Amino acid sequence: MQFDLAIKNGLVVTAANSFSADIGVVGEKIAAIDQGLHGKRLIDAGGKLVLPGAVDPHVHLEMPQGAVVSSDDFEPGTIAAACGGTTTIIDFVEPEGDERLLEALVNRRAQADGRAVIDYGLHMTLVNARETTLAQVPDTLQAGCYSFKTYTIYEGFYLEDSVMLNALEAVHSAGGLVIVHAENRHIVKHLQDKFLAAGQVEPRFHPHSRPPIVEAEAVQRVLTLAEVAGCPLYLVHISTRLSVEALQQARLRGQTAFGETCPQYLLLTDARYDQPGLEGAKFVCSPPLRSADNPPALWDGLAYGHLQTVGSDHCPFNYAEQKIKGGDNFTQIPNGMPGIEARLALLYTFGVGQGRLSLNRWVEVCCTEPAKIFGLYPKKGTLTSGADADIVIFDPKREVTLSQEVLHEQVDYTPFEGFNLRGYPDVTIARGQVLWQDGEFIGPKGHGRFLFRKPFSAN
Image 1 (cartoon, rainbow, N blue to C red):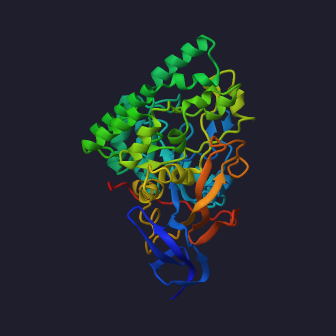
Image 2 (image 1 turned 180 degrees about the horizontal axis):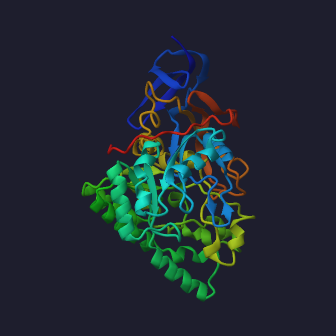
């Protein structure tokens, strides 16, 4: 049989195993994985790794934050993702005021459809948990959006414990999954007020206003609430050793709970806030970067299965036009950093390359587990006959020094400036379409589709 595309001579790497084989693609699907395959188009992957397209479960494109909006919309943001080997993202819907959940979903899809170059899903944010809102959860789930984001912090977003419990029970009853941004808002407000009153307004005070216990306490609390409600829970951007320990203990008790960390928490520390002038504003995100004793616990959590995924939490704001405006009050600096493009390669260089992760675990946390947890597997996140032909050919010897100039993110800096990577995507294929090859984005605009994700089931 002659395939539309044959990828030959590579080392196929999945979450389960690694083996030499060719991959044959027909249309948008993987049709065969075997030896000696031929196609109308051939790509030689000799000496390279062939892996599933990466799945980023946590991005914020075109996201309003107060008076500013994150600098990547769905076109440049997904182009950057594709150039870095990511073929699926999951973003968020944030209803405004009394907007109904399905209406908000339609409006958010209108921002992405025709502009996203890779497939995308959406999490629904529960900005409130009124009875009328929770009654809309089953219909939202049926519309392909079964994961629901909640917060324990931020005015207009946080849910008090009793309200959070109602949300957890409603989502569980409908068969969904609850995502939580967990920080103790009372402690943060108390510490922020103290620093500002003392005139301590520079970016370097941001991490001190959100110490590790702020996250760890809220993580433990929402784990308890979810256990009472019987609801599956996904904790985003875990940054501390204490939070990893709390999640580990919950899972050992048999609780269905998952944890995500991000490259910034694995590779950067709070020393970044101590730079001259307002440079520290570039690194303001919440939770903040932590002291150097935390990243080793996060790496161990990934290696031993206490953490399940790595998301980018890509939420870029330009330093010159947006971040710097909050320089005279760290609480007004837009929260977030770019990272959608380099996530896969960073985890290879500093995970696999430094012996922290096996090849298969690298694929598992960047590709397969996000697809499983968020209802995309086995269509996404794996290489198997019948799966979408989302494929990355990854050169383990390619050397790239990260800078804003080499990346495609629409932002004027990268927090990983100067990082020397060994291992980088050579080719990115999404549903059989080559998007990134020979250092150039060559894919069609608007290639991405909205993903109707199936209801949650424990893996």
